[in-house]
Image (cartoon, rainbow, N blue to C red; front, side, top):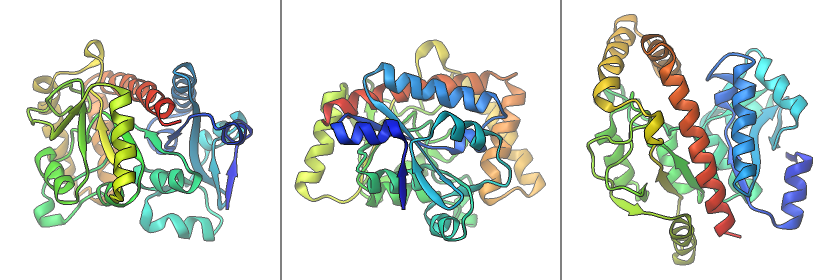
Length: 298
């Protein structure tokens, strides 16, 4: 059921390090052609750091691990693309649809393909008001059961970060901050929350990945990599913007999968595009670290 791009197939045959990449940033993150340009830049960052990128998507019911240039262009302009998580992944494949993979679906495909490391922007988590809506991302359960190391800049700052951290702890997911004690908060280097764990090098992170497998512990690990200092939007600056966007979403009755894209669009407008620039910078930073970890796992 899995189709590998020529580059990924060659890497698998030669035992080269691979890094999985999601595809919702292409279909649901930004307009064409910027979406494709960003995806290619992220792939280039992985290659420059010594690994092979494997962008994952479902095209006409077929799981693709690694996309050719033509497939990337096609996906970047596709309409009516499903946003896939664990719940709707199989239906998309069975019905021949095209779908972009979220964190959860990308982790599923990475495990199927034997890829141990996945780079993304930020994971989903517990939404504000989840005590009433029960809106909690499937990403958290996926981290608890699928043995992939996920490199992100933390959970998206639009979420309830303390509750997200509590759920991850309950599920037994290691949450590791890289090079600092404070948990990163996506656009910002600091969240004001102490990270449960800290590791400073790719070698240490790879060793933790191997040790979990040796101990028979289920699930993966979340590596929270702070955005570079020169690219961040400090928390004191971005959070009033986030709060205003959240209030607008509540007033308009926006819910479920529509919440995140709505909020990101409002924050993009309010920051005159700085939020998107920061988003791209942090994804590139995560891609480089993920490649370093993948090299250590060979």
